[in-house]
Length: 218
Ligand SMILES: [Zn+2]
Image (cartoon, rainbow, N blue to C red; front, top):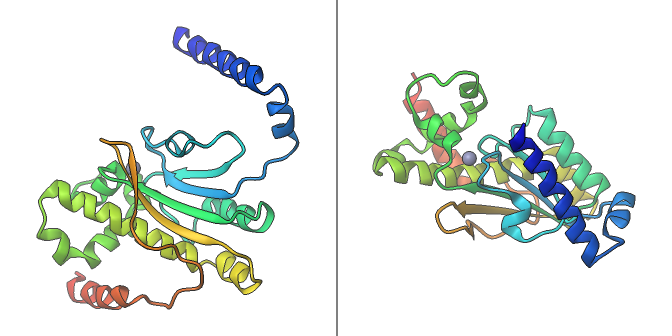
């Protein structure tokens, strides 16, 4: 309980420090949120969206799950995406993975972890698509490469939702960013240029990957 009391004390100190700088801050924030960004990131405690981007409360709408997955069957992420795009009218969607992601590593391992294996099925499929490239790497490098491939794949998933396709069709300006964060230096690196418009289906690398998948399927 002492540990939780510490959190509550931290909270009071934090609220007091904000009030000292801007007495209207919380009153203004309570009346509306107007974020420009939607963050889709990993639940990992070392990758907190606001802190690593230097954004204040009210500036970024956040969804996090294990391994920053955007599954077209996940109503949680779809509801967040739809609210962010249609109601909040955010301008930028950031998919941010991180190197050394435990979820991505679990997807590469050949033993059971529990329920999480079902959640990670899409990443396991992605690893099979890129088997040749990943098998040529040392284990840690393979995890990191799959972390990158996962971010790129999830960004494409966002672009292909009806939510984004409809928004772009209406002329709404939204960019999707594919970022990766490095735990040991705190730095974010963009993996590709932002996606501003609908993308072809499938992407060229996915056509090759799909063939590879068929050849390698059991
Ligand atoms: Zn992670």
